Amino acid sequence: MSSSPPLPGAGGNGTGLIKTVYRRVVDNFLAVVTVPLAAAALVAAARLGPDDAGRLLREARAAHLFLAAFLPAAAATVYLIHRPRAVYLVDYACFRTAPNCRVPFSTFLEHAKQVPALNERSVRFMTRLLERSGLGEETCLPPAHHYIPPYKYCTLDAARGEVDLVVFGALDDLFAKTGISPGAVDILVVNCSLFCPTPSFVDMIVRRYGMREDIRSVHLSGMGCSAGLISVGLARNLLQVAPRSAHALVVSTETITPNYYVGSERAMLLPNCLFRIGGAAALLSNSPARARFRLRHVVRTLTGARDDAAYACVFQQEDERGNVGINLNKDLMAIAGDALRANVTAIGPLVLPASEQLLFALSFIARKVLSGRVRPYIPDFRTAFEHFCIHAGGRAVIDELQRSLGLSDEQVEASRMALHRFGNTSSSSLWYELAYIEAKGRMRKGDRVWMIGFGSGFKCNSAAWECIEPAANAEGPWATAIHRYPVDIPDVLKH
Image (cartoon, rainbow, N blue to C red; front, side, top):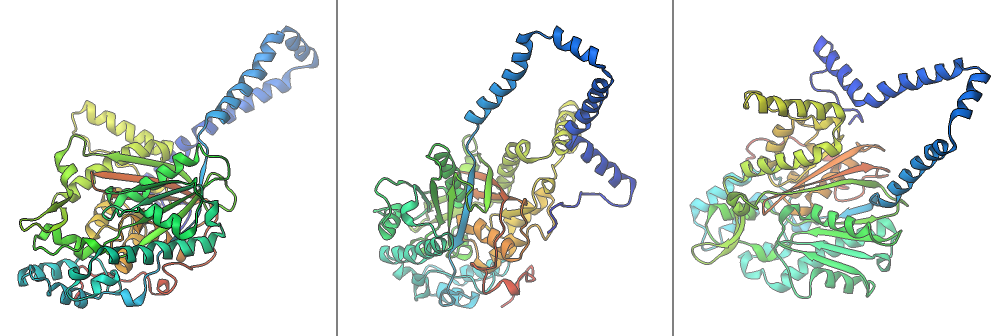
C-alpha cells in the first residue's frame, strides 16, 4: 500500500487538480505564509548598511533583547516539562491456533444438533447465519467445545485450561520475540469480559512467570470487544507517570469456554456462531529503545449514558428458561454507526490534515445555517492513515464501517481476512489484523494505523499508531496461511 493514499476524485480532470492544489495549500498554510515573510525580512536586512544596523542595535534596549531571548526559552522549557510522555509499542504477539482446534461448519452444526433446546428451526437459522457470516472453515474453538454435547464439558477447569492455552501461548511468543524478562515488566493490564475467576488473570500470569511483587496489575472485565484499546489507554496513562524505561504488558482475550449458550433465542445464538478462540499480548514502554510503533492517540467514546438502546444493545441476560447468554440487539448496526460518528468527531481534530478539518467545519456551519439541507461532509480519513484495523465483529460491522468511512476493499482487507481465518476473537482481533498487514509486507516506516473497536455499553474506541520499524518477517499467527490470502469471500458460503 502506498504511503500516500490517492485523493478521492483526483484524476486528470479540473476538479481533481483543484482538490489537489487546495489540500496542498491548506495543509501547508504555515509554510505558504511564513516562507514569503521570512524571505522579505532577509531581503530587508540585506539592504541595511553597516551604519543602519549599528543604529538599530543601539536603539534596542537591553530589556527587549533579554525578553526576546528569555521568553522563547522559557516557553520551550515549560512545554517540554508538561507535555505528555511518549509511549511506544515494543512488539506484540497473537495466539497461534492449532489445527486440532479447527471447527468446520459441518462440525459446529453437528455439535449444535446435540443441544436439546435447539430444534430444527434453530439449526437452520444458525446455518444461514454461518453461511453469510464471513467466517471460513479454519476458525477454532477451545477444546471443551469439541465434545458432544459441548455444554456438559464447559467447566471452570476447562475455562482455566483455555486461559493456559491462549494467554500463556501468546505471552511465551512475546517474551521470546522481545527478549524482555518477565521480571522487567512494571505494569500488567489484562482484559477479558465474561470470565473473571478468582484468583484473577493477572494473578495467574504473575504466578506463571514469577513476576515482581511490586508490579502494578489490573484485570478489566465486562467491557466488551473494545476493551483491548481501553487496556492500551490505561497502560499509556500509567507509563506516562512511571520511571523512564518502564514496561507495560497488555493482554487481551475472551475466554469463551464457559459462555456456550444452550437456549433457542436467536439474538442470543449469534455469539455462539461468531465468537472464536484467540488472544494477544503487547509490550509497551515509555522508552523508544527497540520500539516498533509509537502510540499517537487513544480516543474513547461511550454512548450509553443517556441512550437506553445503546446501553442494552449488547446485554448478558437469561432467556425464558434461565439459560445465560449474550443478547445482540437487532439495532446494533445503527447504534454502532452513531458511536462511530461520535468517535470520529473526537479523533478527527487530532489526526486529520487542516484541509479536511476546514471542509468539515464549513459543512457543519452550512448545515446549521440552512437547517440541515446540506449533506454532512464525511472527512476523508485516508489522508490521515495508511492502514485501518476495524474490529472483526462480523461481516455487517465491516461493511458498515467501510461504507461510513468511504474505504476501499484493500483498506478493509485485513479485517475481512482476520474474520475469515480466525472469526470474531473479540478485543484481540485488532492485533490479528495488524499482524496481517505486516505479514503481507505492506507496512512502511512512518505509516499511520487506525485501530477501531466496538464494545458493550455502547463504546467505540480508537487508537492511532505510527510505525517506527516494520516487522522483519511474517512470523506470527499468519505464518502458515498468509500465502493463501486474500481469498474471495462469497455473499453466501455453501458447504
